[in-house]
Structure formats: structure tokens, C-alpha cells
Length: 500
Ligand code: NG6
Ligand code: CA
Image (cartoon, rainbow, N blue to C red; front, side, top):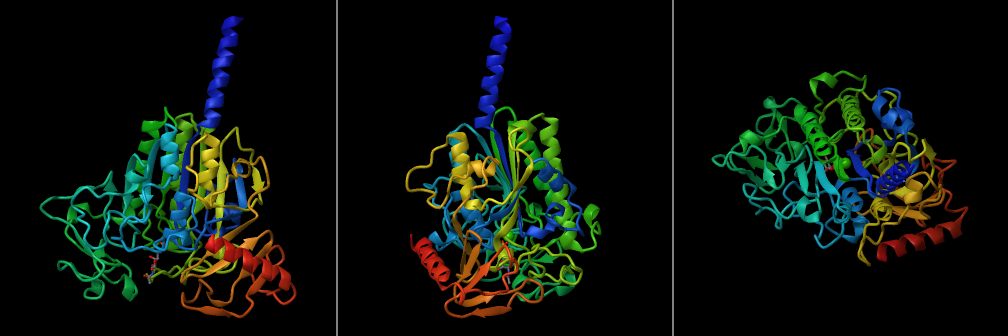
């Protein structure tokens, strides 16, 4: 009897430990829109694995990235701060210095202090080293993920379409031959590698002028590089490279609590899916890339099942910004889109302050703890830091992560209550605010749609535009003249957030 009792005690304290220190995986997709997943209404892409995750977890309908581009959203996710608090949190070149002060807490550093093994695999795009242009890529690259709390890292510097097109593992370029050093510049050509401008005949996909610099793997990029030929990646193999590292990290650390930030490349440009996914959808490479992403997510979930840690692991899936069809490469995404609504019912997409720019697919799964269902709670990715700190009793020094609110109850489906309001950021300093069911877009030029041309702007006049989202998800009916008081309140609230 005593033995049974003590076994029960041990088991229940283990369970309590697991509830406080679950493994945590954040799967962060790139440029994947609200409407790209089957569980959010997509019909042209089979996302069976993400749908399985949603069926076993909580699917959010009002979850947001803080911005409709990458660097700012990632900045917020990791630091718990709106990106407009840091003027450097803008889409960065591939050789930008690290924009996060290492004294700031991040999800990784907070969890590391709680004994978590912490890892980053995939896209970084938050800068590396201390100075633009002069960084020596052939030495230990620092500061970077490690200084922000990631004990292990395997990542690209910025984006798939930016040099350097190499993987960096724990601060060192992988497979770098010291006799073939790497040099990178965003100002002028270095070395004499062919560029998209000089050698368009070498390209798999034609690109706009911005993407017509150094050619790597028959694809021209933004920026110039030379050397490092052994270290250059092959685009089509990237998903397997990242997945392999993510799975190894999980396998190696599954006996202690771990945190994995798995920042996937799909479906950012250049979209060059592995041959086994080419043609798997009717949407061309953009759809195929999402199918590939879904497959990788399935492999992560299978790994958890095989290691028998699914009930002990909180998995969050989301994306950094809304969708874009044409983003520099003539890859057919626009022409083959058909009726697919990548942003779901929302207006706009990447770069915009319309809902499609920042309202994200967001799924939280923790078998046995999160009850499967749907949540309309208003939450932002900026809240993940404070919420995870609350879950794990992690410490955030006072005055830090000041925009991050603890919504762990909403995240775990124990409450429908989320934020009161949140700020949405587009490019060129554009902002908007959502409060409750209302959305306010201040006067000015607002980038419009994703489909035709990235340079289509709408002009919003004084006193700004007001939308009632439950009846007007597509933000078409401006109600500002009918509800001047709401406009005033929201304008003041936005101003207060921006200057806080
Ligand atoms: C833009 C690029 C775009 C993409 C984006 C970053 C041009 C004309 N466009 O500047 O192709 O790379 O930056 O995307 O250069 S993000 O998802 O990482 O924010
Ligand atoms: Ca992105």
C-alpha cells in the first residue's frame, strides 16, 4: 500500500513538473497566410499535418504577428517588445549587425535560466555581429543567437533571397574551406561571381533588379558574395537540412525540458521546393512550398510521438507575416493562384496593415493539457514571452519585455479572454490598431493588395478609416463618420501605445 502511495506521489509530482516545464516548440513559418492551411479554409493545399495539429489542439482566429514583415515580427516574438520601440527592427540586409541588445530577455534566455535546453533552427534575420559590412564571416560570428540565449543554433543569416547563402552552426559557417574565404557586401560587387544582371541565362527563375545580384544555385539573390563555394546551400535541400537538425535537437534533449525555435523557410522566396513536392498542388511552387512545410511539421509531430513526449510538449505553430504572391522572382505564384485565398477572408497581405498582413494562422497543441477547440481570444505573438514565463515561473526583469502580456490561460484554452487591443505594423512606418471588434487605420498612404503589384497604395483621408471586423472582415466599409467617438478613442490609444 505504502509503495503504491509513494508511486502515485512520484508520478503526480512528475506530472506537476511536466505541467510547469513542458518542452516547448515554436514552429514559425515565413509568409504563410491565414488562408493557406486546410484548417483555416484552404482547399487547394493539403495540410493534413497542420490540420491534425489543429484537431488535437487549439486553433486561434484572432492571433497576430506584430508586423507584416519578418524582422519586426521576429523581434517581437523573441523579445516581447513591439518592433517600433527599436528603430533598427526593419527588414535587414544579410550582413546587418545583431539588433537585439543581449541584455534584453528573450524567450530563449528566460527558458534557459529555468534549465531548458534551447535551440534555434532555421531563419534568423535579426542581424549578426557588431558592424555592417565589416563582419568577418570566416571567424566566429558573434554576437548572435547564443548571446540571446540559444545554446544551439543552426540557421541562415537572413532570408533565402539574401546573401550569404550558407548555414551557420553555433556561430561558424558550415563546410567553410579556409582557402576559399567568404566575403559579403550589400554595397558593391565583391569577387567576380556572375550576377543575375550579368548572366540571366544562368538562372532557374528570373528575378527583379533587387534580386539580381550574386547567383548561387542558379538563383540570383539580394546582395553580393564571393568565396565559400563548399559552404553554399542548395535551396531544394534546405527543408531537409533544417528538419534534420530540428529532429536531432529534439532527440538529443528530450530527457530534459527543451525549447526549440524552428523557424522554417517556407514559403518565403525563392520558392524552390524539393522535387518530391514539386507539382503536389495546383498552385505552383507557392502551394508546393506550403505542402512541404506541412510535411516537415508532420515529421516533428511524429518525432514527439516516437519519443513518447507528445503529452509533455507544447507546440505552437504560427507565421511571421501575411502572404505575398510576387516577391521578386517570376516563379508563377501569381499566375497559378486561381481562387486560392492565401490571406483567408482578410484584406491585403505581407507589407500591409490590413488584417491579411498580421492576422496569422496560430495553433497551440499540448495533448492532455490543451483541450481541442477553437479560440477567438485576441492575442499577439508579442505575448508569448510573458505567457511562457508565467507557465514556467521564468523571470522577466522589471521594465523589460514591456509589450508582452501574460495570456497563458488563453493560450492553453482555459479562458477566451485575451488582449484589449493591439498595434499592427506595415512597412514604411504604417500602423493600425485593433481594439475589440474595431479596427482603425490612420490617415496616409496604405499599401493595398498582394495580388497584382506590391506598389498599389490607397489613400486614407482624415480622420482615418474605421472598420467593424465581425461584419466587414475585408475592411471595405469605412465607418469613421458614423462613429467619431470611437475614432477619437482609438487614435488616442494608438498614439499612447506608440509613445509609451
Ligand atoms: C523585401 C524584398 C522581398 C523580401 C522581403 C523580406 C525587394 C524588392 N523585396 O525587401 O523579396 O525579401 O524584403 O521578407 O527587395 S521578410 O519576410 O523576410 O520580411
Ligand atoms: Ca516573412
